[in-house]
Length: 418
Ligand SMILES: Cc1ncc(COP(=O)(O)O)c(C=O)c1O
Image (cartoon, rainbow, N blue to C red; front, side):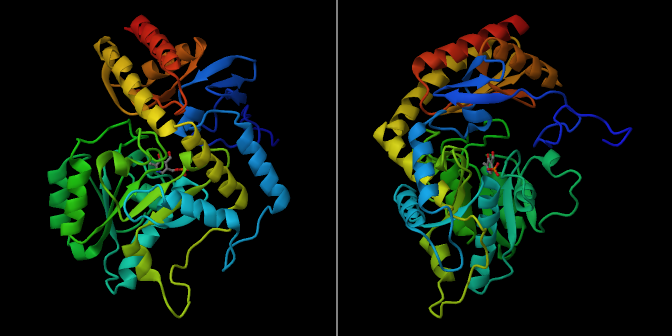
């Protein structure tokens, strides 16, 4: 180490979303079911599904690990440029069979951010294919989160994620979330011949868990049709059962033109995402001459190990009835957590399905949120501390008794802090 350099206890590891000058990170070494185990042996009830709502089936599913290992022994990798493999074909079919509407064309990526990037390129590419290449802009919502690639932060509605990164994608604007008149004004005032798509999450997750008014997404769908603009639903968090339905589109009765997924697609056992297009978008790209119309892809698009994990996830969701279970447990979670809104330290409780947030009081509640999270963890429960709120998004396998434990511990700590 060069003399004078600041020593950080994370050593060579430059951690995502973490202060580079930070101190010892808590280390998680194992997991089983709804629990994870810290390096000091402490067992923690994981109400965050791996920290960021991704381990939807819970930890330590040996059958997924075994299936992945078997695939790696058979064929670790060979795809791209005209080649595929059986598991990619099967997973695409399995996903398409469960999506809303005619979202039947699955383009695999390695993450949610890549799924969003792919969806944005598909949307622009679509308009170019149909001879309207001036339609390149995007409209999205304040507080929306669409990953951390340049496309995602350009359409994202969290300004702190853009700071310091210079020029972004041109033609992106955001409107207040869940205000249908604001969206109408934006689409009318920006020339629709310059707008490719509207992109939003069914329920805003990372921005603080904000469910939309019941009829909002249906109105957005109609408005996009009226203005001849595509609708992209970012289902990276909401997809695969978190709202008690296969997808948020089902929950709100809406079929987008393109949908993005990740997280639950493989329950985070292997990184994977996808952008899934309906026929209108996909068919515009089909060239009978066989040239490459969508010049886009990643080396590991549809990696065999990830595809096998995805197939196992769908098998387990159906075998264990987890979409229904998530719907029941989600209703129970919301019912149990709602009364915490009466605690003096709680500003608001919001939620939908297996997603909930407790926003804390004060002009600058971050230290209070951090202290609450620390005490809750000391009592054996993991929730997420994020800006002004505590986030709760357990694995879909959570039981009612586990919900009770989380609500009990969170309630006790917030009462102490009130
Ligand atoms: C709605 C949404 N879109 C995109 C992403 C980005 O996914 P990833 O972190 O896998 O790149 C996230 C991640 O939390 C998300 O919540």
